[in-house]
Image (cartoon, rainbow, N blue to C red):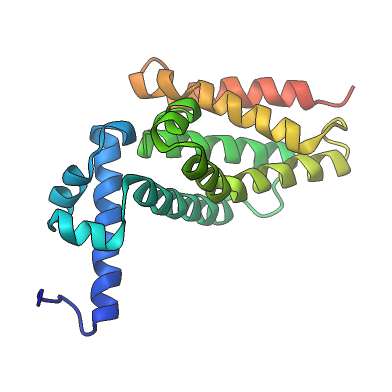
Length: 198
C-alpha cells in the first residue's frame, strides 16, 4: 500500500495530481510540450510511471488536464487584472498581453503539431477546453461593436483571426526575437486599426 501524504486518500490524490500538473508546467518551459514523455513527467513529479498512469492513462489525457488548468488560470488572471470600466480597446490589449504571457510561461507546439501528436479526437477535446478563452475574446469584440468602438463584423471569425495572429508570434517570442511588449503592440495595433470604425 503506497504511503499517503495527506489526511485522506482524496486529499492525497488531489495533491499528487497538482504535483503532476506542476511538473508538466515546469517541463514545458524547459523542453516544450511536444518533447515531454510520461517518464519525464513522473520523474519530475517524484512518482513512479505506474502511479502517473493511475492519474492519466496517456499523454493526451495529461495535456488535456494541463490545458484545462492553464485556461482556468488565464480566465482568473483576465478577470483579476482587467481594470474596472476598461474600454473595448483596453480589454482587447489586456487579452492579447495575457495570451502572450501564457505562451511564454507555458511553451507549446502550434495547432498543426499538436493535432499530429494527439490525433483528431484528442485535439478536438483540447480545442473544447480552450473555447472559454475564445468566448472572452468574442465578448470583447461584440461589446466593442455594440458601443460603436469597433466596426460591425462576424465576431467569432474575427476572434479566430486574432488568435491566429497571437499564435504567429509564438516562435519569435520563444526564440527571443521579439519581447512580449513588442508582440503585444504589433498584434493589438494591427487589430485595433482593422476594427476601427470608419
